[in-house]
Image 1: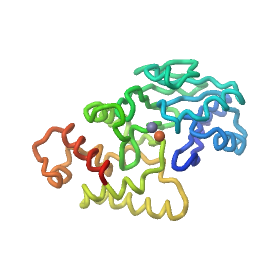
Image 2: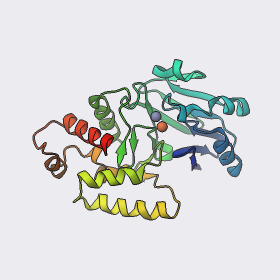
Image 3: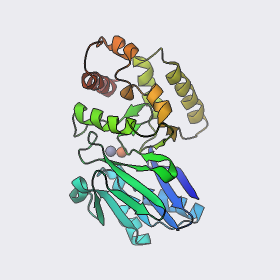
Image 4: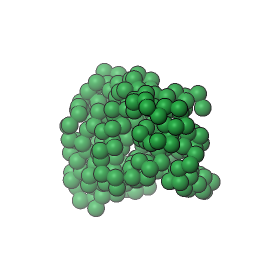
Length: 254
Ligand code: ZN
Ligand code: FE
């Protein structure tokens, strides 16, 4: 049986553990905070065997050294950021498959937020681990890549099975919903999701995971071809990258 444990870390990061009971493997997606990850591991009675790193930012790698010390786990992450991250036992590129017991994590390079960012698709867990590339109702800020880079990265994620569960690096959904409603106010799927997010947050519950299908229907950054969004921006005839760039720029100022 495959189980996923998601929990809050730092101020608004998610920790995520993927556990393969049969093979006794437990994979942490990123290492935002060693103490929170150790607490989650002991709550479940799991032993950490692997860490998969999405990118080099502090809030995704801060726990690597203490977790390596405590568990002797293997650490794998993007080859393009190996130097910045340090501590990688295995360097991953597009198309690699990282195996942990019966779990297989396909590596998808998604430049944009950082140039070396990678995401992991795990079919056995029916999950995409999108780091800071795709958030619910939003996407990562363009710290290093161009709008064209990020648009192409999101196109790769759009090709995954719609029933895939999206896990990501941060609980940003409420702020993302406010922005999404400002550019796509007539979208019923978005309004439904925004209402659900309010209820979940009021109860102190996480808004992730969510299916990609729901994101395809509600996330404006995945909907650059939508006529209503384009009309609202006055960009009916622009290309998709230009629409995406305008959405990203408006979100930065929102
Ligand atoms: Zn980041
Ligand atoms: Fe982050």
